[in-house]
Amino acid sequence: MARIVAGVTSSHVPAIGAAIDNHRTSEPYWQRVFEGFERSKEWIAKVKPDVCIVVYNDHASAFSVEMIPTFALGTAAEFPIADEGWGPRPVPVVKGHPQLAAHIAQSVILDEFDLTLCNKMEVDHGLTVPLNLMFGTPKEWPCPVIPLAVNVVMFPPPTGNRCFNLGRAIKKAVESYPEDLKVVVFGTGGMSHQISGQRAGLINSKFDHAFLDNLTRNPQKLVRMDHLEYMREAGAEGVEMVMWLIMRGALEDKVDEVYRFYTVPASNTAVGHIILENRSKGGRKAAARKPAAKSRKSAPKLKRAAARQKIQRIRS
Image 1 (tube, rainbow, N blue to C red):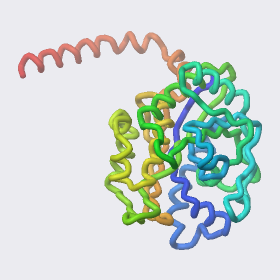
Image 2 (image 1 turned 90 degrees about the horizontal axis):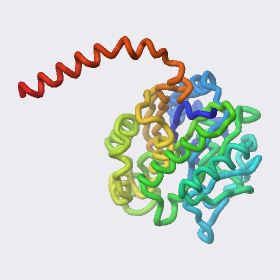
Image 3 (image 1 turned 180 degrees about the vertical axis):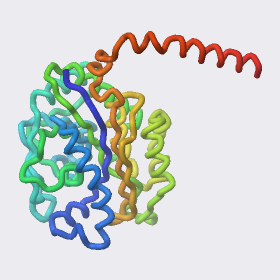
Image 4 (image 1 turned 180 degrees about the horizontal axis):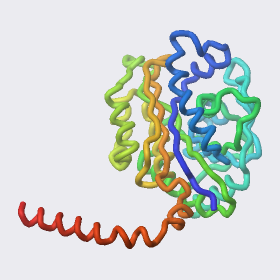
């Protein structure tokens, strides 16, 4: 059985890609950004995912204002790198996993999430920059990638609640796939930033840190947040963070925060990053291996704790 073992969030600032491509990562302005991902690269090298599902938004590369799917799943065997105006980025072609992608599509659509299926799609910095930050600059990406493009560019974007529930549907789909695969889900974009208008350059670190806190411990609070609150608190482009909720919905309710990094600015954006691991890691397999005797041994302790709570309630 395939299982999702962890989730990763990352900003996908295009200037980060330019710094990598032009060998400027050690410059004082960029050094802190890239140092913040060194531990992350070590972590993912140990995890060795078999597949990554990368949730991102297209920047008029695969789609345009003439056609904007809300959710578009890449089902191709490979995804060329888009030319965003200055030639394709010098990064490896992204190899897909058509079998798992097709399985996810079938499961999710039968769960009544309408996806656009893309058997041909170019991918841009929204996907490649997070791959760079986590994997460095290899000759080939170390595992297949399934792109999931989300419309957060043109109104109306999907709600946080819809995104979280899509993550739940993806979790169900992955866990019903028969091959033994370790899957890591990326939620990308954000954090607070606005690139035009009277509030251009806005960064709200207080909001960003609270968002990271709730992403780990109380995602339901984020699920209830509406578009206007994202725009008011995090800028016009802050709504990109609804994509992080797809990642969070794909994980278990209780997760372990392995690592967090935050810095400002990178270009005109707050860079946020977090790694969350499912506590079971192996999903249902890990739960099945738990010795039954250990559960029986803890039963008396649970009864005593319940009794103490009852006494406290009576006293109060």
